[in-house]
Image (tube, rainbow, N blue to C red; front, side, top):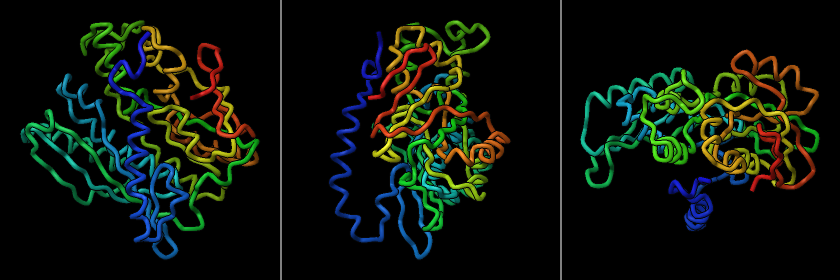
Length: 342
Protein backbone atom coordinates (compact mmCIF):
# COMPACT_ATOMS: atom_id res chain seq x y z
CA UNK A 1 0.00 0.00 0.00
CA UNK A 2 1.45 3.35 -1.09
CA UNK A 3 0.01 6.75 -0.13
CA UNK A 4 0.70 10.37 -1.05
CA UNK A 5 2.68 10.91 2.15
CA UNK A 6 4.96 8.02 1.15
CA UNK A 7 5.90 10.05 -1.93
CA UNK A 8 6.93 12.99 0.23
CA UNK A 9 3.70 15.02 0.11
CA UNK A 10 1.83 15.38 3.41
CA UNK A 11 -1.54 16.98 2.63
CA UNK A 12 -2.42 17.66 6.27
CA UNK A 13 0.95 19.30 6.89
CA UNK A 14 0.47 21.39 3.74
CA UNK A 15 -2.94 22.52 4.98
CA UNK A 16 -1.51 23.54 8.36
CA UNK A 17 1.33 25.40 6.65
CA UNK A 18 -1.08 27.33 4.42
CA UNK A 19 -3.30 28.13 7.41
CA UNK A 20 -0.34 29.54 9.36
CA UNK A 21 0.77 31.64 6.39
CA UNK A 22 -2.65 33.04 5.50
CA UNK A 23 -3.40 33.85 9.14
CA UNK A 24 -0.41 36.20 9.13
CA UNK A 25 -1.52 37.82 5.88
CA UNK A 26 -5.12 38.44 6.98
CA UNK A 27 -4.36 41.88 8.42
CA UNK A 28 -3.27 43.16 4.98
CA UNK A 29 -6.82 42.84 3.62
CA UNK A 30 -7.76 46.12 5.31
CA UNK A 31 -5.80 48.12 2.74
CA UNK A 32 -8.17 47.38 -0.17
CA UNK A 33 -11.82 46.51 -0.79
CA UNK A 34 -11.49 42.73 -0.74
CA UNK A 35 -14.41 40.46 -1.49
CA UNK A 36 -13.07 37.90 0.99
CA UNK A 37 -16.09 35.64 1.07
CA UNK A 38 -15.66 34.81 -2.61
CA UNK A 39 -11.98 33.88 -2.54
CA UNK A 40 -12.38 30.12 -2.65
CA UNK A 41 -10.45 29.36 -5.87
CA UNK A 42 -9.43 32.86 -6.90
CA UNK A 43 -9.15 36.00 -4.77
CA UNK A 44 -11.31 39.01 -5.61
CA UNK A 45 -10.70 42.76 -5.25
CA UNK A 46 -13.56 45.21 -5.79
CA UNK A 47 -12.95 47.95 -8.37
CA UNK A 48 -16.13 49.96 -8.86
CA UNK A 49 -18.78 47.66 -10.30
CA UNK A 50 -16.21 45.01 -11.22
CA UNK A 51 -14.35 42.34 -9.32
CA UNK A 52 -10.73 41.68 -10.25
CA UNK A 53 -10.04 37.96 -9.82
CA UNK A 54 -6.46 36.80 -9.25
CA UNK A 55 -4.87 33.39 -9.04
CA UNK A 56 -1.33 32.04 -9.03
CA UNK A 57 -0.04 28.52 -9.53
CA UNK A 58 2.73 26.43 -11.02
CA UNK A 59 3.34 23.18 -12.84
CA UNK A 60 4.65 21.25 -9.85
CA UNK A 61 6.62 18.03 -10.14
CA UNK A 62 5.23 17.39 -13.62
CA UNK A 63 8.31 19.38 -14.61
CA UNK A 64 10.44 16.40 -13.53
CA UNK A 65 8.65 14.22 -16.09
CA UNK A 66 9.32 16.85 -18.76
CA UNK A 67 12.99 16.79 -17.80
CA UNK A 68 13.11 13.01 -18.03
CA UNK A 69 11.62 13.19 -21.52
CA UNK A 70 13.60 16.29 -22.52
CA UNK A 71 10.29 17.66 -23.79
CA UNK A 72 9.26 21.08 -22.54
CA UNK A 73 6.62 22.31 -24.99
CA UNK A 74 3.59 21.29 -22.91
CA UNK A 75 4.38 22.49 -19.38
CA UNK A 76 3.41 26.03 -20.33
CA UNK A 77 -0.08 24.76 -21.13
CA UNK A 78 -0.27 23.23 -17.65
CA UNK A 79 0.90 26.46 -16.04
CA UNK A 80 -1.79 28.53 -17.72
CA UNK A 81 -4.47 25.87 -17.17
CA UNK A 82 -3.93 25.73 -13.43
CA UNK A 83 -4.31 29.51 -13.18
CA UNK A 84 -7.19 30.25 -15.58
CA UNK A 85 -9.29 27.27 -14.46
CA UNK A 86 -9.23 28.64 -10.91
CA UNK A 87 -10.16 32.16 -12.07
CA UNK A 88 -13.25 30.75 -13.78
CA UNK A 89 -14.57 29.40 -10.48
CA UNK A 90 -15.66 32.82 -9.21
CA UNK A 91 -17.47 33.57 -12.46
CA UNK A 92 -14.64 35.66 -13.89
CA UNK A 93 -13.32 35.63 -17.44
CA UNK A 94 -9.49 35.33 -17.51
CA UNK A 95 -7.84 38.13 -19.48
CA UNK A 96 -4.11 38.24 -18.78
CA UNK A 97 -1.19 36.45 -17.15
CA UNK A 98 2.42 37.06 -16.15
CA UNK A 99 4.84 34.16 -15.89
CA UNK A 100 7.80 33.45 -13.64
CA UNK A 101 10.58 31.19 -14.90
CA UNK A 102 13.33 30.34 -12.40
CA UNK A 103 16.32 28.48 -13.82
CA UNK A 104 19.46 26.89 -12.54
CA UNK A 105 21.30 27.86 -15.73
CA UNK A 106 19.74 29.75 -18.66
CA UNK A 107 19.02 27.48 -21.63
CA UNK A 108 17.63 29.23 -24.73
CA UNK A 109 16.28 26.03 -26.31
CA UNK A 110 14.36 24.96 -23.20
CA UNK A 111 13.03 28.52 -22.85
CA UNK A 112 11.90 28.40 -26.48
CA UNK A 113 9.94 25.19 -25.88
CA UNK A 114 8.42 26.55 -22.67
CA UNK A 115 7.35 29.63 -24.62
CA UNK A 116 5.64 27.44 -27.22
CA UNK A 117 3.51 25.86 -24.50
CA UNK A 118 2.65 29.22 -22.96
CA UNK A 119 1.47 30.50 -26.33
CA UNK A 120 -0.64 27.39 -26.90
CA UNK A 121 -2.21 27.78 -23.45
CA UNK A 122 -2.87 31.46 -24.09
CA UNK A 123 -4.56 30.68 -27.41
CA UNK A 124 -6.80 28.09 -25.74
CA UNK A 125 -7.66 30.57 -22.96
CA UNK A 126 -7.92 33.70 -25.11
CA UNK A 127 -5.65 35.57 -22.70
CA UNK A 128 -2.68 37.89 -23.14
CA UNK A 129 0.67 37.12 -21.55
CA UNK A 130 1.63 40.67 -20.71
CA UNK A 131 4.95 40.21 -18.92
CA UNK A 132 6.93 38.07 -16.57
CA UNK A 133 10.24 37.48 -14.87
CA UNK A 134 13.15 35.13 -15.43
CA UNK A 135 15.61 34.49 -12.61
CA UNK A 136 18.83 32.50 -12.54
CA UNK A 137 18.99 30.76 -9.15
CA UNK A 138 21.83 28.20 -9.05
CA UNK A 139 21.85 26.36 -5.74
CA UNK A 140 18.16 27.04 -5.18
CA UNK A 141 16.49 25.71 -8.34
CA UNK A 142 17.24 22.37 -9.95
CA UNK A 143 17.04 22.96 -13.74
CA UNK A 144 13.89 25.16 -13.74
CA UNK A 145 10.52 25.98 -12.19
CA UNK A 146 7.58 27.65 -13.89
CA UNK A 147 4.66 29.54 -12.37
CA UNK A 148 2.11 32.10 -13.46
CA UNK A 149 -0.23 34.71 -12.02
CA UNK A 150 -3.42 35.55 -13.86
CA UNK A 151 -6.21 38.09 -13.60
CA UNK A 152 -9.80 38.10 -14.74
CA UNK A 153 -12.86 40.33 -14.47
CA UNK A 154 -16.43 39.75 -13.33
CA UNK A 155 -19.37 42.07 -12.71
CA UNK A 156 -19.91 42.40 -8.97
CA UNK A 157 -23.49 41.16 -9.27
CA UNK A 158 -22.35 38.10 -11.24
CA UNK A 159 -19.74 36.74 -8.84
CA UNK A 160 -20.24 33.03 -8.22
CA UNK A 161 -19.42 32.43 -4.58
CA UNK A 162 -21.23 29.13 -4.04
CA UNK A 163 -23.72 30.69 -1.64
CA UNK A 164 -26.61 29.95 -4.03
CA UNK A 165 -25.96 26.20 -4.00
CA UNK A 166 -28.93 24.36 -2.55
CA UNK A 167 -30.14 20.84 -1.91
CA UNK A 168 -31.28 19.19 -5.13
CA UNK A 169 -28.93 21.08 -7.43
CA UNK A 170 -27.28 19.01 -10.15
CA UNK A 171 -23.54 18.35 -10.42
CA UNK A 172 -22.19 18.23 -13.98
CA UNK A 173 -18.69 16.88 -14.49
CA UNK A 174 -16.50 17.90 -17.42
CA UNK A 175 -13.84 15.38 -18.42
CA UNK A 176 -10.18 15.77 -17.56
CA UNK A 177 -7.40 14.92 -19.99
CA UNK A 178 -5.83 12.60 -17.43
CA UNK A 179 -3.68 13.33 -14.41
CA UNK A 180 -3.46 17.08 -15.19
CA UNK A 181 -0.87 18.74 -12.91
CA UNK A 182 -1.70 17.25 -9.51
CA UNK A 183 -0.59 14.11 -7.74
CA UNK A 184 2.53 13.68 -9.86
CA UNK A 185 4.67 12.91 -6.80
CA UNK A 186 2.52 9.87 -6.04
CA UNK A 187 2.34 8.86 -9.70
CA UNK A 188 6.12 9.04 -10.04
CA UNK A 189 6.60 7.13 -6.78
CA UNK A 190 4.44 4.29 -8.11
CA UNK A 191 5.56 4.13 -11.72
CA UNK A 192 9.24 5.07 -11.57
CA UNK A 193 10.20 3.73 -8.14
CA UNK A 194 7.85 0.91 -7.21
CA UNK A 195 7.40 -0.40 -10.77
CA UNK A 196 10.90 0.68 -11.86
CA UNK A 197 9.57 1.84 -15.23
CA UNK A 198 11.26 4.15 -17.70
CA UNK A 199 9.55 6.93 -19.63
CA UNK A 200 9.27 4.84 -22.81
CA UNK A 201 7.94 1.74 -21.04
CA UNK A 202 4.30 0.80 -21.33
CA UNK A 203 1.82 1.84 -18.69
CA UNK A 204 0.93 -1.19 -16.51
CA UNK A 205 -2.02 -2.95 -18.14
CA UNK A 206 -1.93 -0.72 -21.23
CA UNK A 207 0.72 -1.90 -23.73
CA UNK A 208 -0.12 0.81 -26.27
CA UNK A 209 0.43 3.71 -23.84
CA UNK A 210 3.84 5.02 -22.87
CA UNK A 211 4.41 6.15 -19.29
CA UNK A 212 6.09 9.46 -20.08
CA UNK A 213 3.65 10.61 -22.77
CA UNK A 214 0.67 9.70 -20.61
CA UNK A 215 1.95 11.61 -17.58
CA UNK A 216 2.86 14.64 -19.69
CA UNK A 217 -0.58 15.01 -21.32
CA UNK A 218 -1.47 18.70 -20.84
CA UNK A 219 -4.16 19.83 -18.42
CA UNK A 220 -7.53 20.61 -19.98
CA UNK A 221 -8.34 24.31 -20.18
CA UNK A 222 -12.02 24.97 -19.49
CA UNK A 223 -12.19 28.65 -20.45
CA UNK A 224 -14.20 28.41 -23.68
CA UNK A 225 -17.09 26.27 -22.41
CA UNK A 226 -17.34 28.01 -19.02
CA UNK A 227 -17.13 31.53 -20.41
CA UNK A 228 -19.90 30.72 -22.91
CA UNK A 229 -21.95 29.34 -20.03
CA UNK A 230 -21.32 32.46 -17.94
CA UNK A 231 -22.43 34.71 -20.80
CA UNK A 232 -25.69 32.79 -21.19
CA UNK A 233 -28.87 33.36 -19.22
CA UNK A 234 -28.31 30.19 -17.18
CA UNK A 235 -28.00 30.74 -13.42
CA UNK A 236 -24.81 28.98 -12.35
CA UNK A 237 -24.72 28.17 -8.62
CA UNK A 238 -21.18 26.84 -8.31
CA UNK A 239 -17.98 26.10 -10.24
CA UNK A 240 -15.11 23.91 -9.02
CA UNK A 241 -11.73 23.08 -10.51
CA UNK A 242 -10.91 19.52 -9.44
CA UNK A 243 -7.21 19.62 -8.62
CA UNK A 244 -5.12 18.24 -5.75
CA UNK A 245 -7.47 16.98 -3.08
CA UNK A 246 -9.86 15.53 -5.65
CA UNK A 247 -13.55 16.07 -4.96
CA UNK A 248 -12.78 17.67 -1.61
CA UNK A 249 -12.40 20.81 -3.74
CA UNK A 250 -16.19 21.02 -3.68
CA UNK A 251 -16.02 21.85 0.03
CA UNK A 252 -14.55 25.24 -0.87
CA UNK A 253 -17.87 26.33 -2.36
CA UNK A 254 -20.41 26.05 0.45
CA UNK A 255 -20.01 24.39 3.84
CA UNK A 256 -23.75 24.25 4.46
CA UNK A 257 -24.45 21.56 1.89
CA UNK A 258 -23.08 18.18 0.88
CA UNK A 259 -22.40 16.42 -2.40
CA UNK A 260 -23.47 12.94 -3.44
CA UNK A 261 -21.40 11.84 -6.44
CA UNK A 262 -22.76 8.60 -7.88
CA UNK A 263 -22.16 8.66 -11.63
CA UNK A 264 -18.54 9.44 -12.46
CA UNK A 265 -17.10 8.45 -15.83
CA UNK A 266 -14.66 5.55 -16.04
CA UNK A 267 -11.27 6.96 -15.04
CA UNK A 268 -8.52 7.10 -17.66
CA UNK A 269 -5.83 4.40 -17.89
CA UNK A 270 -3.31 6.42 -15.87
CA UNK A 271 -5.53 6.18 -12.79
CA UNK A 272 -6.35 2.52 -13.36
CA UNK A 273 -2.64 1.73 -13.67
CA UNK A 274 -1.70 3.57 -10.47
CA UNK A 275 -4.55 1.95 -8.53
CA UNK A 276 -3.49 -1.50 -9.73
CA UNK A 277 -0.16 -1.05 -7.95
CA UNK A 278 -1.64 -0.93 -4.45
CA UNK A 279 -2.79 2.64 -3.84
CA UNK A 280 -5.95 2.54 -1.64
CA UNK A 281 -9.11 3.60 -3.46
CA UNK A 282 -9.74 6.32 -0.85
CA UNK A 283 -6.30 7.75 -1.57
CA UNK A 284 -6.95 7.75 -5.32
CA UNK A 285 -9.99 10.00 -4.93
CA UNK A 286 -8.28 12.13 -2.29
CA UNK A 287 -5.29 12.90 -4.54
CA UNK A 288 -6.41 12.77 -8.19
CA UNK A 289 -9.22 14.18 -10.35
CA UNK A 290 -10.09 10.59 -11.41
CA UNK A 291 -11.29 11.67 -14.86
CA UNK A 292 -13.33 14.76 -13.96
CA UNK A 293 -11.46 18.05 -14.15
CA UNK A 294 -14.21 20.60 -13.60
CA UNK A 295 -17.65 20.60 -11.93
CA UNK A 296 -20.58 22.88 -12.72
CA UNK A 297 -23.48 23.14 -10.24
CA UNK A 298 -26.88 24.26 -11.53
CA UNK A 299 -30.58 24.04 -10.77
CA UNK A 300 -32.06 20.99 -12.46
CA UNK A 301 -34.38 23.20 -14.56
CA UNK A 302 -31.29 24.41 -16.47
CA UNK A 303 -29.90 20.94 -17.13
CA UNK A 304 -30.64 20.60 -20.84
CA UNK A 305 -29.51 24.10 -21.80
CA UNK A 306 -26.30 23.75 -19.75
CA UNK A 307 -25.43 20.41 -21.31
CA UNK A 308 -26.07 21.86 -24.76
CA UNK A 309 -23.36 24.45 -24.17
CA UNK A 310 -20.77 22.32 -22.39
CA UNK A 311 -20.99 19.26 -24.61
CA UNK A 312 -20.05 21.34 -27.65
CA UNK A 313 -16.55 21.49 -26.21
CA UNK A 314 -15.90 18.47 -23.97
CA UNK A 315 -17.58 15.35 -22.65
CA UNK A 316 -19.90 16.37 -19.84
CA UNK A 317 -22.33 14.31 -17.78
CA UNK A 318 -24.44 14.39 -14.63
CA UNK A 319 -22.23 13.06 -11.85
CA UNK A 320 -24.40 13.65 -8.78
CA UNK A 321 -26.46 16.09 -6.76
CA UNK A 322 -26.30 18.47 -3.83
CA UNK A 323 -27.53 17.15 -0.47
CA UNK A 324 -28.40 18.66 2.90
CA UNK A 325 -25.51 16.86 4.64
CA UNK A 326 -23.28 19.79 5.57
CA UNK A 327 -19.71 19.58 4.27
CA UNK A 328 -20.03 15.89 3.30
CA UNK A 329 -18.66 14.67 0.00
CA UNK A 330 -19.75 11.12 -0.76
CA UNK A 331 -18.31 9.43 -3.85
CA UNK A 332 -19.14 6.15 -5.54
CA UNK A 333 -15.78 4.95 -6.86
CA UNK A 334 -15.14 3.06 -10.07
CA UNK A 335 -14.71 -0.11 -7.99
CA UNK A 336 -18.32 0.23 -6.78
CA UNK A 337 -17.25 1.17 -3.25
CA UNK A 338 -18.78 4.35 -1.81
CA UNK A 339 -16.47 6.52 0.29
CA UNK A 340 -16.84 9.66 2.39
CA UNK A 341 -14.08 12.10 1.49
CA UNK A 342 -11.85 13.21 4.34
